[in-house]
Image (cartoon, rainbow, N blue to C red; front, side):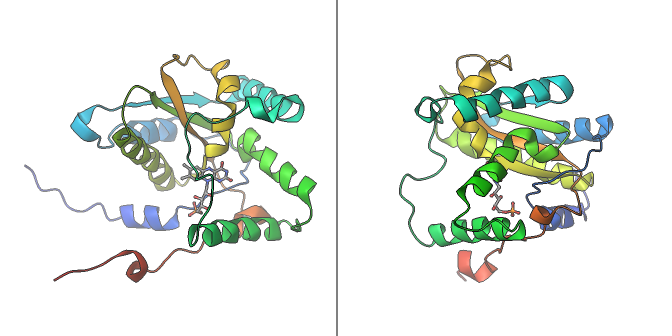
Length: 230
Ligand SMILES: Cc1cc2nc3c(=O)[nH]c(=O)nc-3n(C[C@H](O)[C@H](O)[C@H](O)COP(=O)(O)O)c2cc1C
């Protein structure tokens, strides 16, 4: 096997990645998009089964999808819109609850939305469906007949998109919120019935003026999640 020199910018791409929730109205260059997608497909997977599928929406297809979901969120019955898998626990426990709250509070505080302002929080939540103004939206799906290990493979595929985007000077946000609206999304994408929506993603250039892009999610020190055994 040929030993290749380390790719020195991988670490900085990882370290500068963060979720961006407001984007510039600036197109993503096609060649950069294609490199990101090609890189995603290089993700490892158990037995190399490559269980992922990717849908990329922009322009009119993105606008139609956004309009449909916004309408469903406003006028539909919330009970009818449930995810097909539990990304989050039904009952939160510590320390995860505290971490979850911390990012939520920081986001709303950056926008001047108070904890009592439910309408303000809902309006911010709905910006998800416009991909926070990003020119590109993505949906990652996989075959539901596979097993739980596939979720790891899918995570690696998604992570390659997030890191690949950084290496192109682009930003992203993972969007599990779309999973609640998979039935609506299915009407816009040529998804087979066997496909399960893992998550949505926004891709674009971060708006440096966006207050919601200000807060940086606090990360744990290495010592809190690593045990070294000699
Ligand atoms: C699979 C996945 C789904 C996510 N879903 C959402 C979402 O629906 N809406 C949102 O605003 N952020 C979403 N996020 C972003 C997380 O809130 C974010 O990654 C976390 O707060 C850590 O911040 P960081 O990405 O800046 O490190 C998601 C992230 C991942 C990985």
